[in-house]
Image 1 (cartoon, rainbow, N blue to C red):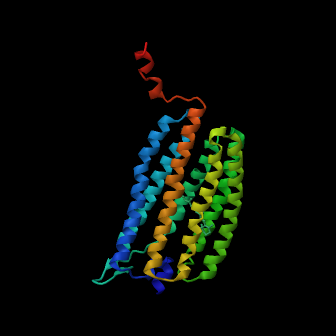
Image 2: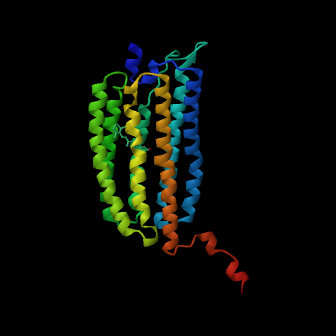
Image 3: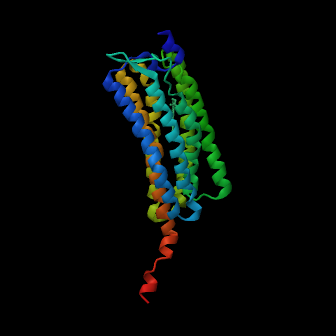
Length: 278
Ligand code: RET
C-alpha cells in the first residue's frame, strides 16, 4: 500500500494474527524489562570493583537506562500502531505508524559507550585509550547512520536497502579491525590468569553484533507476519546479548581483575573477622 511505503517500515504493510501481535508485544516487553532490571545489577557491581574500573559497570547502567527507554518507546509504538478488527490486528488503523528507526537513534548513543568500555576495562593508558576509543566510534557511528538511511528502503526499494547496507557493512568491517586492535592490546595488558577473556570476548562481539545486519536484510524474504515477529525477536536477542550479557561479562572481568590487582572492596576491608580472631 502507498501508506506503508510512505512510512518506510514493513510492519505498516502487514496485518497480524492475534498470536503474532501478542508475541511481538511480549518480545518488546521482555526486552525493555530486562534492560531496566539490570540497571541495579550494574550499579551494585560498580561498588565492588577497583576505582579505575568503576566506569565500566556505570557505563553498562547508562546503556541499560538508555536502551530500556528506547525499547519501551518501541513497545508503546507497537501497541498504538495496530487495531483489532475482529479477525486480525490491522496496522495504521488509528493513524499511527510503527518504525524501527528509533532503534538506530538509540544505537548512536549506546554503541560509542559499549565500545569505550573495552579500552577502559583493559586498563589502556590515557592517550592510547582516547585515540583507540575515537577510532572505534567513528566507523561505529557511520555504520549506524548509513544503515538508518538504508532501512527506509525496506518496504520495497531493495536497491536503497542493499547499497546502503553494503556501505554500512564496509564501516562494520573497519570497526571490527579497530576492535581487534583493542582486543590485542587487551590480551597483552591483562593479568595472565584472565588473558583469555579478551580473545573470547572478540568472538562473542562478532557473533552478537552480526545479528543486526541479518535483521536489517530480513524483509527481503517476504512481507509476512512471521518475518515481522522474527525480526523483533532477532533485534531483542541482539540487544540483550550486545548490551546486557556483554556488560555482565565485562563487569565480571574487571571484578576478577580488581581482585588480582590486590583491590579489596570497602565492605570486606571493614570485616570484623581479623578483629574477632584477636
Ligand atoms: C546495520 C545496517 C546493515 C549493515 C550493518 C549494520 C550493523 C549494525 C550493527 C549494530 C549494532 C548495534 C548495537 C547496539 C547496541 O545498543 C546498521 C544494521 C553491518 C552492528 C551493538
